[in-house]
Amino acid sequence: MLRRFGFMLVFCLAFVMCTAAFAADGFSVSLPETVRGYTPGEIRIVSPEAGEAELCLYDVMDNLWLTRREHLSAGENRLPWDGLGENRERLFAGPYRFVVKLCTEDGREYTAKAKFEISGTTPALVYALPSAYTLYLSGGDRWFTEVFVSAECTVVMEVRDSTGKKVFSRQQEISDPDGEPIRWNGTVSGKKKIAPGNYTVLFHSKPNPSYEVSFPLRVEENDPPVHRVEETGPVMPERGMSDEEIWEMMMKPSVVINEKGSSLRIDLYPGPKVSNRPVGTLCCATQALEVLGFEGAWARVAAWSHIDGKKVEGYIRTKRLKVVVPNTPYGVLVDKREQTLTVFRNGERLGTVPVSTGKPVGHETYRETPARSFLTDVRFGSSFAQDGFRYEYPLRYDGGNIIHGVGFTREGRGRDYSRNLPLLGQKSSHGCVRVSPFIGEDSPINMYWLWLNLPYHTRVIILDD
Image (cartoon, rainbow, N blue to C red; front, side, top):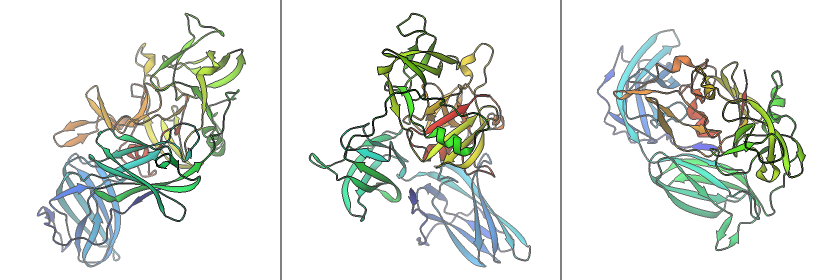
């Protein structure tokens, strides 16, 4: 569970307040001239009356990054803020402004504005996402935690037992701007292993420990359960299924190709032997295969070809397959017909947002977003550039397509989303799934939330249209 302590209640009162604050009828708002992300600070509001206030944070392009609702008292109000956006987004350096609207009990309305600069971020832990919530001392996949920091710094990992006693700790310098995994095999000293049981794992950056991430970890002595490659039945939900049925489908173990790297390609053959004319090419490690039966050393499977997204049936050697259990607590459902993305948490719908999936152009059928069942792969950075746009917070779920933010261009010191943001809700991408960077009225989900919260091997199901 994420725990933040960045909103401190006591701050130094000797801030140099921004002179670009506008007052009306005794109502004013001011901030320090410069603000840094992941750094305790405050918004100072002087109000002539008590009432309910809405604070909106805009960048230079009028993009809305944060909305806060606060009760203000008459006189001076000091509101803690650590320079982050709605879902703890790290905000680009540049000019911003707060617009504060106050409504009093007798219906009077006041408005005030304050301009200021965000100058970057203080080094802090952004996320720590485990590869699984069980560590097996005797075998299984090697356990790791994906770690991302706002700037190069030392990250501290601690393991505490059920009484809160620290039983293991380590430090690791995180210098890669795309993040790094922190691996652990359960060894606490020399070759001594930690005792089986229930633990809590905590991560924080050494220079900024207020931003801490913790999660439970079950340590088992014996090998993990062995899941044999068997006939699977359907791996894709049907339209009209209940949320309970969809969640059950999401949490089913997946038969995948047993090769490292989601970008590798494996041919599927028309019969139980190697052929020069495969019926399709599959991506490895992340696509769930529907196992239909077996012939000798071969498995007959149904899958979706990576090249054109069409469903195909063919043969692959059984020894090239393995069973993977999806991570918890989230699952993602992308509906190409409705152009929506829905997040499930422990079987319940957390939120739904509009998306843009792939739009084929002419004979470029590869642009169609393939419909199938996947598991997310390890992250590969916080942004990338393509065709003149920059896309933030990519989540890879196969070798070519990813879920990422809507593309933007830089306009001076701001981000311009105007070309791609209006296309949400319709097909427009090259095959990836695009998500808004902003929070909508009906859902807490945006692209940053997905990037911040979805761990390795989260289920992603894409329904065809």
